[in-house]
Length: 72
Image 1: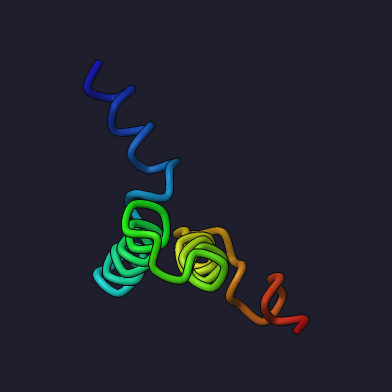
Image 2: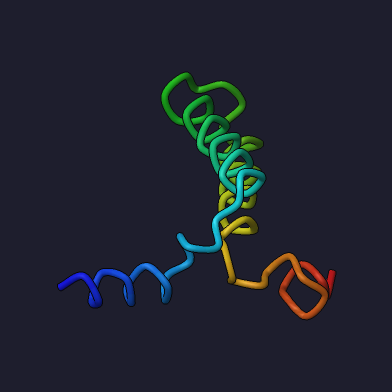
C-alpha cells in the first residue's frame, strides 16, 4: 500500500508543487472568490483568476517556452 501511495505521489503534479505556484494559485482562487461571491468586477476577475490557476498547474508546461503561453 505504501508503494502505491508513493507511486501516486510521484506521478502527480503535487510532488513538483513549489511555493510560488501554490501562492499564485491562492491568488487566482482569491480573485475568483471576489468575482463570484462578492460580485466585484466579475467580467474582469473571472478570466484572470482562471488564468492564474491554469498557468500555475505543476508540470503542465503551459507557461514554458513550448507551452500555450509561450506562443503568445
